[in-house]
Every structure is written in structure tokens, then in C-alpha cells.
Amino acid sequence: MLAELKRLVDLQELDKIIRGVTQGLERLPEELRAENAALEGMQAEHGAQAEELENLQKQRLDTEKEVAEMEEGIKTSRQRLMEIKSNIEYKAMLKEIAFKEDQRDHKETRVLELLELIGAQKEAMAEQDQKLKEQSELVATRSKEVEVEVAKLQAELAGLEKQRKELRKGIPAALLKRYEFIRQRRNGTAISPVHEGVCFGCHMNILPQQFIDLQKGLEIIQCPHCQRILYWQAEEETLEEDLSRSAS
Ligand SMILES: [Zn+2]
Image 1: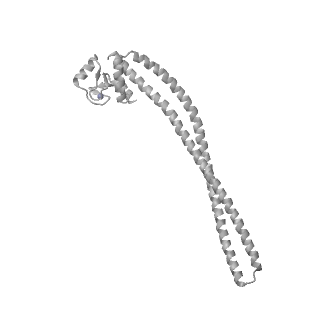
Image 2: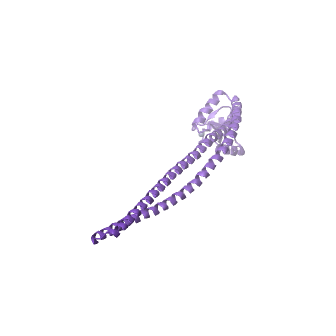
Image 3: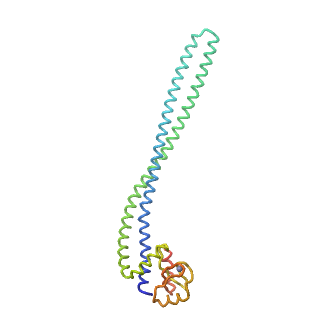
């Protein structure tokens, strides 16, 4: 194989590792942002729940006050009942008292309903508190982890970039340009092995004459279908190595 082709294979392997590290560096803060957004959502939900609880408590106090006032009204009516002499007036007053008692009963039922709602709301809030606490802890732990992971990846990336720079020095500029051009259009794979006349980049047959030329190893040959730069390795074990490499 041409020496520059061999370097190009190494460069592609290195570029793939660099891409993985770069993606990790982008993904980690993104993950953390998502966890933080979830936490903020939970805090907002908690705030809304607290507001609703306050609203229910206020309704309860207001309704209890109304019940007390009604109780007072009923008491007054009962006292007036004693002073009434006329039978018709007495009956009318009894009716009025019954009506007021009915209204009071409704309000008392409402108080019980509100107490139930308040209880349920407190339970929901306790559950939300627990979730909030867990998410807070997760964000705190993850923040520290991400910080460590990012620092590690950045150090790794610096080392890889240095290697890459060295490797590129041994490859002619025109070939590097061609490599970058194809790499951008072929999802990071610009150079591909050929086995039994088949390009492993696109799994199609290259031309027979190309295959003969490729085996001679004297010039740079590109796949007529996917334009990837081709190299030939006959041995089975190296092929397997290449396959696992292109799979990663
Ligand atoms: Zn191809």
C-alpha cells in the first residue's frame, strides 16, 4: 500500500475517535441542561401546588366563617320564635329557620369537601417534594460528574489533536483536501477497504481494471459509486480488523 494511503487510514481512525470525543463534549452539557430543565419544571409545579393549597385554605376559612355567621342567624331566629304570638308568623319563622339550617348544612358539607381536597393536595405536594429532592440531588451529582468527564475528554481531545497534526504532516495537501471533501459528504468515512472487488463503503463492485490497479498499489483510486478513496488488503485478518473499524 502507498505510505500516504496508510497514513490516511490512520488519520481516518483518529478522526473518528476525535469525532466521538467531540460529540461527548457536546452531549454532556446538553444532558445536564435537560436535567436542569426537568428540575425547573418540578419547581414550577411545586409553586403552582402551593398556590392551589393556599387557595383551598382560604376557601375553607371563608366557608367556616360563613357557617359561623349562619349559626348566629339561626340562633337569632330561634330567639325571635319565642316572642311570636301569631300562628301564621310562627310557621313562617319555622320555615325560615329550616331554610337557613339547610343552607348551613350545605356550607358544612363544603367545608368537609375542602378538608378532603386540602388533605389530597398536601399528599400530592409531599410526593412532589420527594421528586424535587431526588431531582435536585441528581442534578448536583451529575453536575460534578459532568465536570470531571468534560475535563477528561478535553485533555483527551488535546492529545488526539496533537497526534492528528503530526499525522497530517505526512500526507500531501491535495490528498488531505480530497479526504476532507469526501469525509464531509460520506458521514466521516472517506477511505474504505476493498475486498474481492467490493468497496466496503458502499458495498458495490468497483471496475475490474480499478481492482487490478488497486492491487498494484501505485496510485490513489476512488470508488466510482461513492467516491471514497480505496485501499486493498488481501489478508482475512486485516479485513476483519477493517470491518470492526468501519463499524465503530
Ligand atoms: Zn464505494
